[in-house]
Length: 73
Ligand SMILES: [Zn+2]
Image (cartoon, rainbow, N blue to C red; front, side):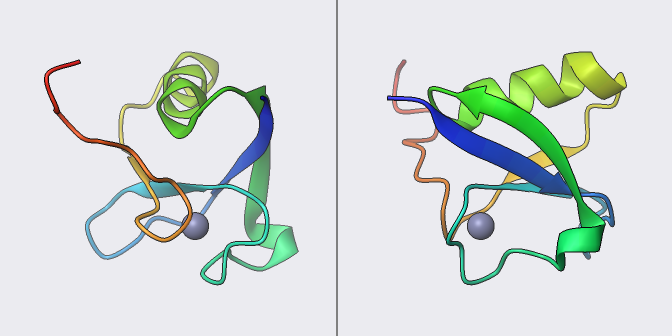
């Protein structure tokens, strides 16, 4: 199932752009979001964001992006 992802154009305290899915309670103001389109998961959305922008400072939102980080995948 694909989900629409977007990221905050403003960096957070760690210097990263946080990637969010809709309905996130921590999602930024609409005018601060950049659309990433439909993706299967947050990791894919981040990979797309990196390719799209050429930046590498993207981070998954711990609130809406549930990733099993480095769980041997
Ligand atoms: Zn979020």
